[in-house]
Amino acid sequence: MIDKSRSPNSISRRCSSAALGALATAVLIASAPASAAAQTRAAYEELQTFSGVLNHIRLNYPDSVGYTELVAAAIRGVLRALDPHSHYESRIEFQRQNALERGELFTVGLALEEVEGAATVLAIAPKSPAAKGGILPGDRIVTMNDTSVAGLDMATLALRLAGEKGSKVRLRIERGPRLEPDTFSVTLKRNPFDVRSVSVVRMVDSATGYLRLEEFAPTAADEVHNGLKKLRGMHAQRVILDLRANPGGIVVSAVEIASEFLPKNAVVFRTRGRKRDTDTTFVTKRDGDFREVPLVVLVDERSASAAEALASSLQDHDRALLVGRRSFGKALMQSIFFLPSGDIVWLTIGRVITPSGRVIQRRYHGIGYEQYLSFAGKSGAEEDTLAVYKTDAGRSVRGGGGIVPDIVVPIIAPLPVWWSAAADSGFDDAVSDSVAQTLAATPTARSAWLTAESEWRAKLLPPFLTRVRTRLGVSAATDSLLEKRLARILAARAAEVRWGPEAREEFVLRNDRTVRVAIEQFPRLRELLTAPKGQN
Image (cartoon, rainbow, N blue to C red):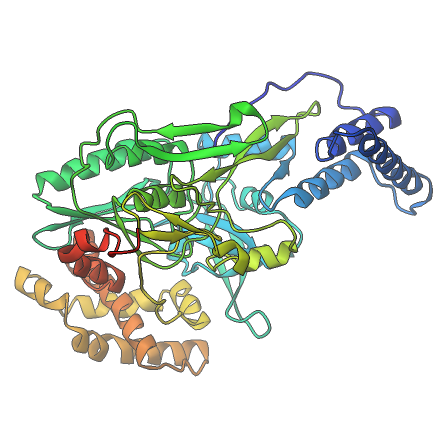
């Protein structure tokens, strides 16, 4: 997101009927065309209609309704009619957000996105209260402290999840199909947790370095640079950059990170909007220190915004092979505008376009809001995917909503709702911790545990499933794929308890299917990043 702030005006917050009409006029004109005289007249007539509706409400509605409430609802409606990501924040919400950023309030570590009208978890901060509570990406929040969250925009809900240190929030969660979901409740304690853009820097094998970028915070570029230097010091000959479940953040950080891998003056992305000062081409300012390192980038359906801008740039320049699943499809540039009341509007002012000319943002014009949201991580409308673009080497790529990886890795077995209920109750930790104490603390035992799948399943699954079925009173039905995933999760916890956090990181990477697929591509990376004969 790129901010171009305007200073707020200091005027009275009381609003007369005339002032209300003027404010409504200003809001609606901003979204109305103003070219021909006939169009201006039509807009004026529409504004008269709007003013008339407000007057009817004031005179006839049986309950007392303040103009402030009505205008706020009108503004939200106007912004919703423009695109799915422009939104309104009240002055109080804005102040609360600032308090959260200053560390005066604490939250639970959830990134939210509205999907089909539901508050849906897009990403979870590692080691946050939400992560410890067993909440998973794709879960839907139904109630907060026994109050429905229906109708709340995601920015407002995110702020309501924040509170004083040590305070608790109770969430009712849905998981699974919308028509027949499983539900469970979880109580999360708001506590500080370490928020870092780069969460893991380590060697996967003797030649392959791995760096996980969780989000594009202000320090993201420095953290990535330092992580790459650390990998170089560990003699990494090639690198995997993991952008899976990265919800984005500061888009300009994508330029700084891309600069690590590209030569000077390479186009990272372009922005295009109505005003001339919005049209900008972002290029690298230096030759990247790691521009020659073989690179694979991991993405999935929860990679969004700045993560997509970075991944698409590296793909268009044939600088990295993308592995995983289609990305989220969100690439609109927004700016903050202050209203006279002190409230603010986040307004979309442009689009992010990749070096080859692709539009990452999935379609929203001409379709319903709910339909738009249902396309997350999926291809856009068929006509949007017909256009073919070319990378620097002549490889064919397409737009149409999100970034399609060069190598697709199917999704793994989903976790059932009873898993989160068990995690919230600590059943997973109890079993894993107990088994961990039976393992030898030697390096040999640690190394053997990393790949001992049959041992994980034999030692961890039976007592865990027994505890779940007995304590929760559920059948906890499983299949072979789910059993493999559950065993890996429990075994990772056992590795951490017995040999420490570093052992857990090694375990997770060693048993990550997408990471394994990425490693397999390095021997033929040059071939994969070259257009087949006749294609270019």
